[in-house]
Length: 284
Image (cartoon, rainbow, N blue to C red; front, side, top):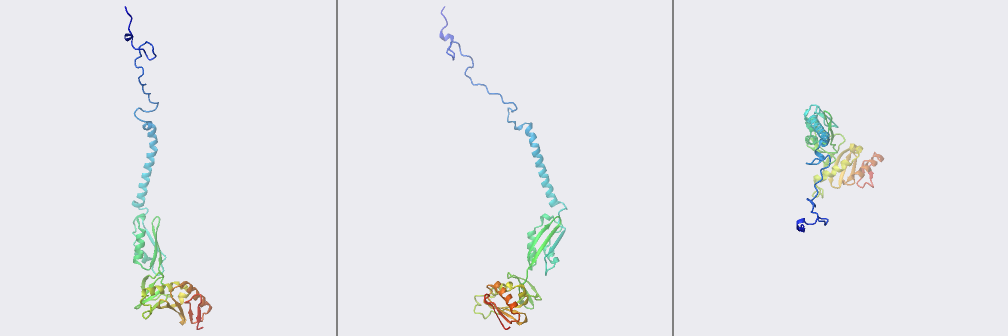
């Protein structure tokens, strides 16, 4: 009987031998099992350790929310931090009561809700004499108003009254009696050759410039500021003395020169500081 043929024995195996190939030879290796401690459905971030780490974070957030809510209630909802007292300081001509009446601060309102800018605008709008006002919260129950009044440097006669003008040229009040130590403006520029170029408002500005530059001792002795034209300003002092000032230019230097002349020649009747580097006196 003949032996088995090659076909009957099967093809040689991978090593070239005549044995048949093993079942499954050459197939891909099965996947490795996951490492210990790792879930088959996701990473380890969802495990008990992650839940433990989230606990302090949530507690901190809850505490922060509680603090914010409590602080908001204390500022706006409680009766602890509300306006109970309003004070005004810095007044000279006005009274503190006038300032408080103009401010109309809402007593009983939460202190934090008070609009300080609105109060400042209200005081300045209702009291033109006020130059500035500083509104501050005085915790836990107060509002303080620190005011600065305008100071007149010149008066404009108007019928039987006097209009007060400050160093910025602001006409801020009308009073029945001239304040002591403030000169009165006398404007006589109708026939001035420069009247068309320098109107009354411009000449008033020059007069204010001169009056505002006068040293306080000189201002107290100045009775009138006479303006005939832009460059013709004359001061009338007490005891019948006069000063040729010229224009409003170099007013500070002219004020210093006049102060020195008044000390050097107290009996002189006329002073000329129109050229402050070469002042002169006469009538002594």
